[in-house]
Amino acid sequence: MNKLKKIGLTALAGSLIAGSVNAADMAVTGTAALTFGGGDENKNTGNGWSMSDGVTFSASGEVNDIGVTMSLELDGGAAESYTAQLFDDRSITLTLPDDMGTLTFAGHGGSSALSAIDDKMPAAYEEPWAVVTGASTAVINGDAEEDMFTYSYSHDSGLSFTAAYHNAEAGQSVESYNDFAVAYTGVEGLTVGYGTGTDHSTATDSEESTMYATYAMGGMTVGVQTSEKDVEGGATSDVDTSGFGISYAVSDDLSVSLGQHVAEYNSGDDQEATAVGISYTMGSMSIAGSYHTVDNIANTSTDDRNAYEVQIKFNF
Image (spheres, rainbow, N blue to C red):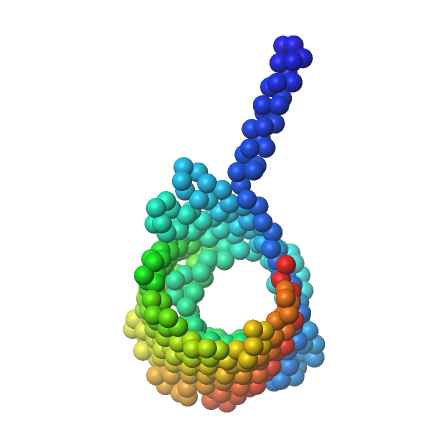
């Protein structure tokens, strides 16, 4: 092969490689946050400081009119050691042709339809049940597991639908999980939604459901939500929850909120969580905080605690 042919083939191969690279859009985003927490939560630990950070790499392209997006997150979390959780959320999403929705497979960090709407109440920072250790056990929050399929579809009318399925691996206590959720945003300012799911455990099954409504008018947003969990043959494990939230955008950058979440058990005292929050945004940086009081944590009448948290977060 003469030199001219070699140069021609080399140029052709280079153009093909360049073409395949250019066909995919690459993006890198990330966050870094510094958090300080105190109150009853910090009486015995002493140091309330922590840091969390994450970098997400994504690549997207198209194959036969089907959009393909791959996402991989490097996440240090708030742990002292990066080793256990360096590689965090990862997924691949197919955008189906003719606006037929998206199909996502999450190798890690999957969020079911119910998990995505576990608390839709407006909040400037954290939910009422967050921050205080143990309070989140009262939240009816679907499933978030590895190797989860999720399908989502939205219509121009404002109607959307999401369904998820997770088939457990050997050694897990859950045999499978499936759920779906619908939402409607066709009326200006109003959002209503409903979701339900079934947890097929090796021991017993449980049914979860939630419904919510939020309404925004001017700078104010209000919301209410009610959820329930029914455990087959285990009435003492049943939980009914209700919550409300109200937030107000003082300006484009400053928001404040008040929220409450109550978990009612078949026996014992109800868990009652209340929180006030505030957030301020300056470009890619935000400062936010909240103060929480929780009574009868996880149905324990002698466990009442308060906590506060302040966070500075950078997005890039």
